[in-house]
Length: 329
Image (cartoon, rainbow, N blue to C red; front, side):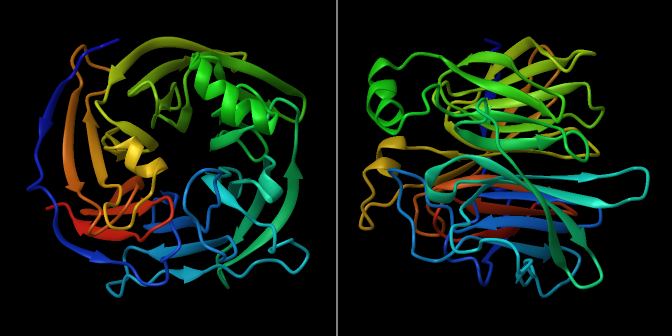
């Protein structure tokens, strides 16, 4: 594992404000090049706090000074009552600039991927199809590669409820994996993780980044012509990191992390789980720079799961709590 010089610099964030309408989590956030953020809310994950609110997808225009998240119009033919959104990813088709939203969904605690097309005129989502496969049995996050292709992390090895919730934590073995999916080819492309969580891609599309939450590390993988992945290195992050977002211009990585996993699992509102944001620069260098840019004891935001940067602002989301936006400069 590559060791990085981890610095603690909390003075980089200013004017942090809580975003409206996102009181029931904002587990994953991804931002288009024009500053439009997509946000998944209402996740119900076994063993973690959650609300009775239905799962929803919100958008936030980071170029609008009002910074008000709004709910997407969802199609009538889509089952909203069982909608349980987790990781998300967007893909822009270079042929016609159509935007596709991929959403990991856990209806009745199953795993499947929902594919939507974003309609910009009225900020609605058209549901195109539901993707299920036996290899996509415990999906956490996803990174889209085309209009119907993606890489996904399975955060557990077992699919049976009792085995994954009781036996797997007891064994604590690095058995979980990353899967590549296309309509004609579905396969395990990387394995050996304790709890693979967030996944994303480098701006040049040559590398995939996978966060191993229980391994306290971020893995760098090289894409091959057949869509398999080869390990390049892993970088210690010193925290239980969740999702990873990539700055398309600088290639910097932003990770939402959990500084204390025990507080997250044994939730006590009087002693809440804290939040932490890790920033990684020069990820492909021999010595990447790993920096803590935000830390909170849970009084502002509990259980941060994602951090995404755009235009001098940083949006921080959480598993089940609030979301905040801060000035980076």
